[in-house]
Image (cartoon, rainbow, N blue to C red; front, side, top):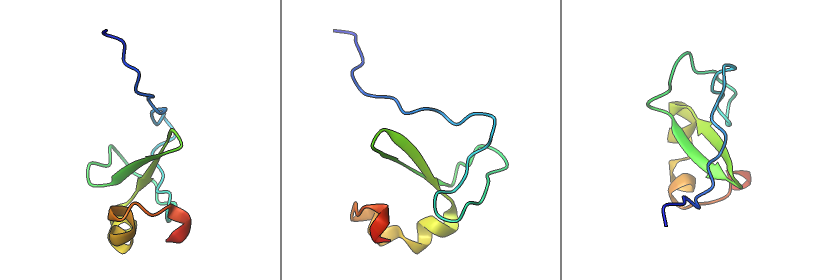
Length: 66
């Protein structure tokens, strides 16, 4: 079985990648940002937002708890 059954969320387009926490826009591919998939949708967090919420991220808490 060569079929990939893993759902693939949409990739960011030309509009840039926006931080889900503070709204900062990445000027290029954000290699140091954190990415999570929630309900099949990718969410990116800039370095500052990821640092501020690292315990909640590692604890797998829903973002509404942050």
